[in-house]
Length: 308
Image 1 (cartoon, helix red, strand yellow):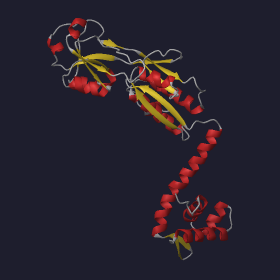
Image 2 (cartoon, one colour; image 1 turned 120 degrees about the vertical axis):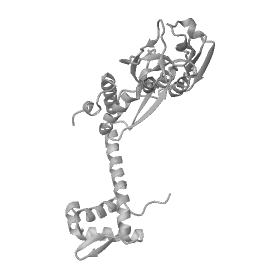
Image 3 (cartoon, helix red, strand yellow; image 1 turned 90 degrees about the vertical axis):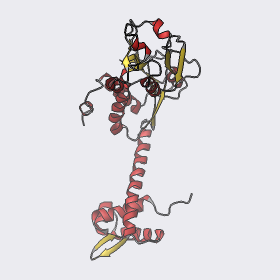
Image 4 (cartoon, helix red, strand yellow; image 1 turned 60 degrees about the vertical axis):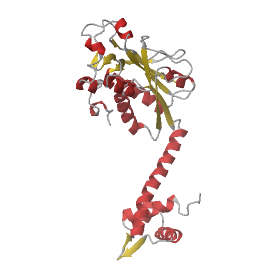
C-alpha cells in the first residue's frame, strides 16, 4: 500500500484555517506562526495536486475539491484521535474488546438496554457478542473464548451471579391435534405427537433438555425456527414466552393445557472468565447487565439510563 503524502497534522491545519476563518486565526489557535500555516497549506496543495483554497478578498475559501477532501479528512482525524485515546486507555488497563456469549433463550431486550447504556461509557471498547444454545455457552466459556457468559445452567467450576428466570411455555398451534382433544393433557398425550427440539450448539456433550421421548422429533437450529414451525402447525415445543408474545396475542400459538409442566422458569446465571481478571470495561458491562436484567422487560428505556 502506498504511504500517504499528507500527514494528519496537515489536515488538522487545513481544518483550523477553515473553521476559524483564515491563516492568522488558525495560527493563533494552533500556537504557530502565520507563515508556518501558509506553508503547510501550500505544501498540501502541492502534494495533492489540486487547489484546496482560494482567496476571496481577505478570506480563504474552500474550492470544490477542498470541500470534498476536508469533509473526508474530518472523519480521518477523528478516528486517529480516537485511536490515540484508545491506546491511552489500554495503557491504563482499559480493554480493547469484551467478549460476551449468551444463551439464545435470554431476552434480547435486556441485552440491548445494557449495551445501549454501555456504549457512551465504553471509551472505544468493542463488544463481541456470540449466541449459543444450551451447553454451547459452557464450552465457549471453558475454552477461554469469552470474558462473560449468560447461561441457564450451573456451569461446574464457575461461580455465577444469579439472574432473572426465563419462562418457557409449552405451545402448539390452536388447530393442533393436542388442542383438539379439548381436555387436560398429560405426558402420554405428548409422546404420541411430534416435538420440536432446539439443537444444542455444544459439541462435546450436547444435551437433549426438554425432550420427552416423543415418537416423532424434529431438531432445529434456533428458537426462531422452532417458533415458525410451531406457528404453522408442525408439532409442539417449549418456547421462551418473551419470544412468542406476538404469536400468542395473534392466535398463532396457544399454551397447551398440561396437567403439570406446562410452564418452566429456569434461572439464568452470569459468569466471568477465570483466565484473567475483569478489566474496567468488563466490570462496567457486568454491572449494566445485572441492572437491566433486574428491570421489568416493559420498562421505559430512557428512565433506566444512568444519570449524565
